[in-house]
Structure formats: C-alpha cells, structure tokens
Amino acid sequence: MSLARTALRLATLEALRPSAALASNGPWLTLAGKSLFDSRVDPIDDLSPHESRPIACIYTDDDEGMPGQKAGGPPFRMIVDLVFELSVVALAPSDADPDVYEAGIPETDAELEGSLDLLEAQIKFILLFHPNGFIWRRLTGRKVKSIHSVAHRSSEEAVRLARRRVVWKVEVLDDCFDAAPAANVTGLDRLPQPLRGVVETLAATAYGAKIAQGLALDTPTMPVAPPLKTVTLNEAVANPAGVMPAQPNIVGAVNDLDA
Image (cartoon, rainbow, N blue to C red; front, side, top):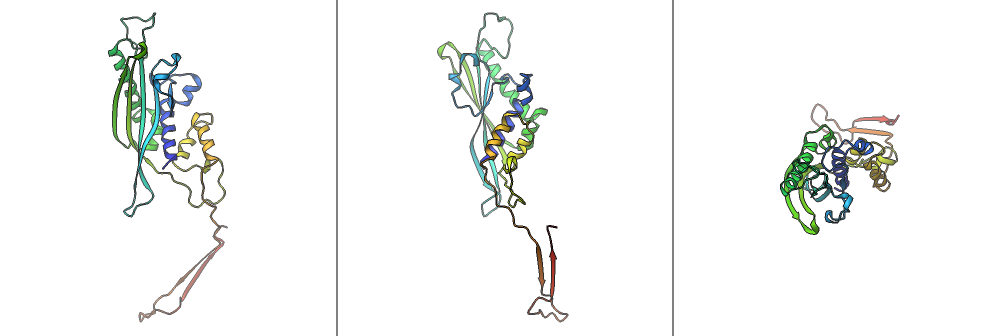
C-alpha cells in the first residue's frame, strides 16, 4: 500500500485546512490557521520569525498490512501511523493585555500548554465529528485503533516552544487498481482507489489536485482487457439410467457480447 498513504494525508489536510478557506484566507478551523503542512521536512525549531505561531505538520510514517486471507496476499488490511507534529510558541507582544489569554498567542507556560492541548483537541474534533471532516471519515470509516501523544518542550534562544507528536493508528483500504480496464485509462482515472475518490472531491485548484495530477502521469495500469465476442458452454448430462455420455450432449453459445 503506497498511494493510499497519499490519500490519507490529502484527506487530512483538506479536512483541517479547507481549500475554500485557503483561497479566502479564512475562516480557519484550528489555531494553526493556514500553517498546516503536508510532510514538511525542515524542523519546527528552524522556522522563520514570521512563522512563530501555532503550526501543525501531517505525516504518514509506519505502515503495516495484514493479509485478508489465511494463505496471505492481497487484499491487505492496512494500519497506517498518521502523525501530527504540533508546535506552539510563547510570545509576549508589547500590545498584549497581560490579563487576557489569547489561545493563539500564549504568554505563560500554563497558557502555552493550554494552547497546545486546544490545537490537538481541535484536530481530533474536526476529523471525527465536524462536517468538514467528512472527506476523512469516508476514507477511514473512523477506524482509529489508538492515539498516542508525546510532549516535547524547549526554551532555547529565548523562545519557549511546546510541541507534541501525536500518532493515530488508522485503518485504510489498500490500493485498488482496475484489474481489466475496457480502454486505455488517462488522467486521474489512472489513479487507484481510494486516492482517486479523495481527489474527485477536491476542487480543481486544490493543493491535492495538483499532487494527484503529477502522480497520475506515472501510475501503473493494467493492460486493456481483450473484447469477449463469444462464450460457448458444453455440458455432459446423464441419461435417466445415470450413465454419463463420453462427449457433451448440450452445447450453447452466446455471440457478440460487446454489442
């Protein structure tokens, strides 16, 4: 299973950072706002000053497949680690009211922890219950096997940073390719399910649509199935005495199946 991981990341990103909100610069569903990223590689600690705000990065890490039949082999039941790297920094802007706590700009250590907890709670609520999480729930069926959250804290360089690595073990469908296409498939039709289904729900200008278009160019496909013109059925039917004939005694044929 490989492209199903892409489907999981894209569905998660769309649920938490909707394309419509990105186009209109809000309203946002989480403290991270538009600072939700798919598989960002650079460390959260090295973010530029203008990114000193709540941030969430989405990854898919460990992926384990269990065969759906005793003898092994596909289809597999896939359990994927859906990972959220959450970060909140504590700031003390000069115009902030010390008597007012704003979740997006915490000042004290306690406020910092509260904002981090809120960001994690927002993600959980949106994916499992909020209407915008429908794309994610349709993909996963809400089959979350476990949730594990680990805290990391730092006060280096005069910036207090609180982070959490949250790992959801999520069950998703294995890649499902068309085994016998009737014609050469092109464009997004080359993609297997469930990725194709996720992409079909996205706007053409969405981030995920761009990713999918590039993947589709080199996605493997099965050869076109040869047209079936005729099917012939032969049966050997016993006589009343129970004796089986040496040769078929009933012959039937169906022609022009593709007509």
